[in-house]
Image (spheres, rainbow, N blue to C red):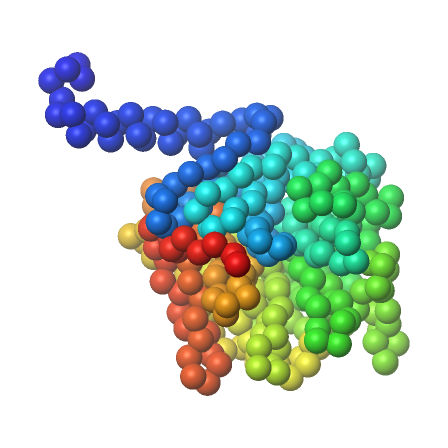
Length: 339
């Protein structure tokens, strides 16, 4: 009986129960605001089972667009989360769901989001197709606000077939300094890059006439993303199996968006004392020069494949421009409002 327990222990029990109630809240609930420690974000940074987070900065708000981590047939929507400071997060439920995409039925995965010309474009994968005879792949949706609602732009997949052996999933979008946009994507251990048209309705062939160019680095599995720093192109990806403890993030550096990319090594991997299965990430780069890695991991003691949570930790570089190993934390990053 709790009347004989110390007050501090009772308060801890109540705190855990309240946290569990929030984490297990069903996705149909209306949006709400999640407040952690007022000084630090804490990890996980948002409540609930989520994975494959896409991070972005729009104006004075941080945004995260993750995959709902559940059985494929229940992955029929995408939520978004916004924050002014990395600590207080507001949930925007169902910014996109299958009712707005005629060809999507399940397995809505790994959003990628771009702001362009006053609109917001959400790239997503759906249906987990296994061959070119099935309908699905990578689509793109459009909205006037980062919280949606998003609606299918094309009425069909943007990439609806296998090219160079790459399953059409795990898309990200990279904007180069010259204003050109590229789609980088691919599962099944193959990565492709394709140059997007300015309106994102299709692709512009490369100078050699190819549309989908393979850029697969050594040990690549899935979850690619690209960024540019000091004139060099960084390609990052996930290695290992997504259901296992060895899931991790590695990177390579090249001189152009099409590479070639030489693998440098892993920068994020499991820490059995904290979490396993750390991977499928994105990055935040603030106007004042800070870098953050936003990723999912499986909490210590969890074994279910879909029990994944979204976390944020600092990303740093050495003097030569190489990425330093990421230290996973429970306390997360410090409060950092956008100015």
